[in-house]
Length: 133
Image: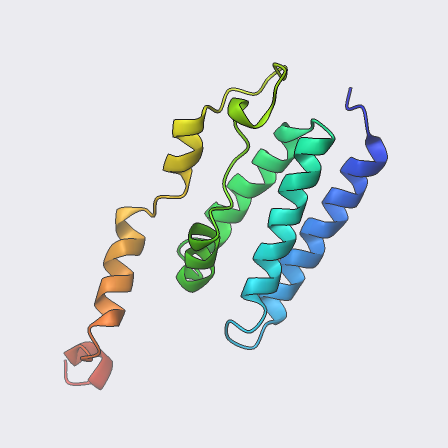
């Protein structure tokens, strides 16, 4: 049973606010702020020794936004906001199976995201985009 039910409830509410900021953001205007909030939740999760809920939410976040909003995921990667790992804690945390290497690997983009970013960085529109096909 979690030791800090209030902390978990506040964390859940904060994730809701983060998702709202992202969805309501004009382009990427609020992406930095959203990632700063995630980084703060990460710090609080370390202080409260509650890494599992944070890691679960961050995994959901990646699944939801890595492909949908690659510029948002790029902010997460640049700020190095990753999963909590065993190296973030002095004591062993029951159920925490993420090591430092896995936390770093979590920030790597999938091949599909890299391909999409590279194709948009070229600056030349495809024939499909021009309506020529």
